[in-house]
Image (cartoon, rainbow, N blue to C red; front, side, top):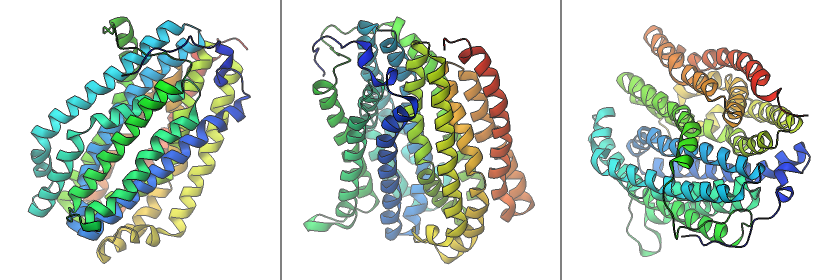
Amino acid sequence: MVERKTAAPPAKENIMGTLPVNRLLLTMAWPMVLSMVIQGCYNIVDSIFVSTVSQDAFIALSLIYPVQMLMVSVNVGLGVGINALLSRRLGEQRYEEANDVAAHGYALYLTVGLLFAAAGILLSRPFMMLFSSNPAVIEAGTVYLYIATLFAAGVGLQFAGERMMQATGNPIMNMYIQASGAILNLILDPIFIFGWFGLPAMGIAGAAVATVIGEWCGALIGIYLVRRKVRQIQISFRHFRPKWSIIGPILRVGLPAVVVQSLSTLMALGLNKLFAAYSETYVAVLGAYFKVQYFVCTVVYGLGNAVVPIISFNCGARSRRRVEGTIRAAMVTALVSMCAGMALSLACPGWLLGLFNLSPEAVEAGIPALRIVSLSFAASGISLVCSYAFQAIGSNSFSLILALLRQLVLLLPMAAALLWTDPALTWWAFPLTEWSCCILAAVLFRRAHKTRIAILEE
């Protein structure tokens, strides 16, 4: 797939060890943030197009959303393990081992894509029947889910290219990978959904086809850029053999991150099941909230993609000053962006919900819901930055504890209790959970700093 090239340059050429921290974070993060914003826009526009087909189609997409989250979560979590090990090897100037890590990264991503394809073939319809008794919702969701999972390898291979760019300090190329697929998706969505230019109108199936084409476009561009533009890693599959000495460390870091990331899927599944038993209107409101929340969190997600390789690299180089500076700058940026998202949600909830062509009943229920949930945004930003830092320095158990509490242990039981008491109070489960976990994150970070960061050289 990718040929071996010239020898790697000296480690001093990697900007993660040379640029001032604030400038480095800006340099690494802004292309990733822009890419996430583009993908967030695609996510919202995709839902808007589907909602014009019917509210049943939008509800189907809302029920499918946790599976899409799971695919992304597994790939992101696996990427944490790959990126942490690759960045550390580059920081330690162990280039041959870095090359082997990169090759194993591609192989692992491809394997994950094939597993999702097998699951989609067997389980798409049973999954939809588990969450809905509406035949129109079941049929629409089954078609979309089947197509999205059958070609899921494109998601993984796109992530593989992105992780190579992040670990080698090439954020602009990383943006090309993400943005190319998202922009193509935006262009193809209305063409396939509504049948423009003489094509048949495919409805929700067209949205799925546009999605997988965009993902595979990003994957192919990533493979090209790794092969032609990246000088710090040289990948060859000519004599490739799986090595547990590489797979083991990747999974030790990556699997806890997969679990952490996937808990959001379980949370969404649990809330969908809970709300579906009460009212499809609440399912629609929840689906709209997830889209808005993803867009609000794009800056923090982009920061996370930058923070993990920067901290991992500088842990390998044993630079305490750069590790601390990166975390501090990320925390300030996250707080500013999440407070801006809260202000927008408090001021314009009706406009945000109106983007999704919801029924008047859903909009009426959604306006107070979005205002209440937005009170959790600042706390969520702090917890997410702490989680990224925990993953990068090897305190994965702390990330797991936070994720379990935020997504399952506190949120779901609290939401169920409030729904039973008064459905309008259900949304208070989000801020109550997030602020409790924010306090815990501060306590855990202080402990992790003492054992993992304070011992590094100045």
